[in-house]
Image (cartoon, rainbow, N blue to C red; front, side, top):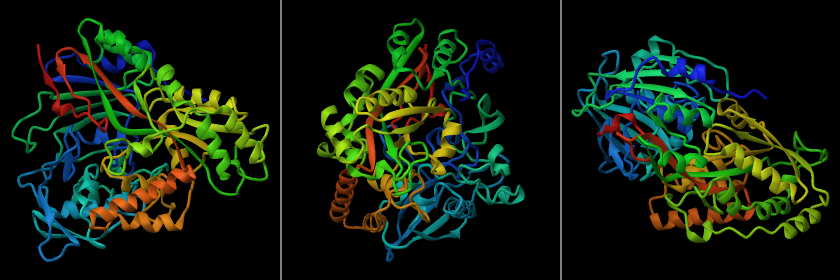
Length: 525
């Protein structure tokens, strides 16, 4: 299977175009944005890059608080609790000089909730979006939706006229080869403009001088270089070829921290790393069991739950840089509890007994699909899982790919057993349920890779979008989690801990959603 990598000479070509200065930041991470179409992919790396070019109505600071961006204020309409009113920032222009107005917001929210958009589940309760005047937008919900603004932190606003002129009204469908003008071209209101782009090689952004913010970023140019190979990323930082490495290998944290002119910032991420199974009676594509699906048996899923050694993964694979968990939600998120977070001690003997009771005394074969450049030590985690499954008789083959090749397999439900990570930008469990647990249909279940389906849970999940009684809503969340845990829908491993390495004169805090903004960078001595 082909792996993407940089040789030293290729890296030199990629980053040598501009020397480091107080205005230029050369930013490297393991993967690239999957597309420039801002409503195509609900994926962290893609959002992170887009936040420099496009803007959202609301945003979050590094403490996780909602803050204004293109909307200066938002409130529920007096006399109608089903309508959200957004007051828009005045004096904002797109990079081509066009004025930003309410019509752009209407167009963008409608585009984001269209059928091909991978952001549509965030707007599933929206009935209509209306421009009241040039700087006021009303969003009519299917019912009271007190948490809707939390869903807007990664929904970017596009220029309606630019999109129509360039045939970019329809969203690029995630996981497909569809193309439109917005896939490779941009026109946002953000602090940076796209200058050039070579996917998976190099992108250059320059400051947008007419950006609305009074305080201009200290960084005036960004040179973004995806470097898939961990050793090459670290070498580029140590040699001075890049200034910031976002995805620091855990095995290199100590060495980088003690290197002259380098510092490392660490912190927990609002992201869980987990494995998932394919449900259903149809036999697995990659298994030697040809008459049924072993994962459809709850005893098999329980056996795997007991076979995984989360503490060993933390100590050996992650070098202590992870937080093992028994539930597929980080502690940042509403609905998390210490009781849900608890996980059992590894019990290989009991796991073997369960497999035998399920009719697989000799185990079975299966392929694990994993990315190798998206999460911290993702391939190594999956390799460890191969060994742990082998101890109970399940013979797993590892299929490792860059995230650009892993994502279509995930989105098209073409995997039997897979590793994925999930961040929660809304800081609420409904975001997890909407995407990962609800039956894959309509606006829901976009990342329900295993095609799990429980109609009773579906109704409870939908109710969360419009429930105004917070106590009742939290009770429903607890009920959903109880069933998800009982069914072992997902196999959580740990919550990710982040490390950013940078030149010692650069100040950049770890972002809880792993979406650092280069416009927040400051320079010291």
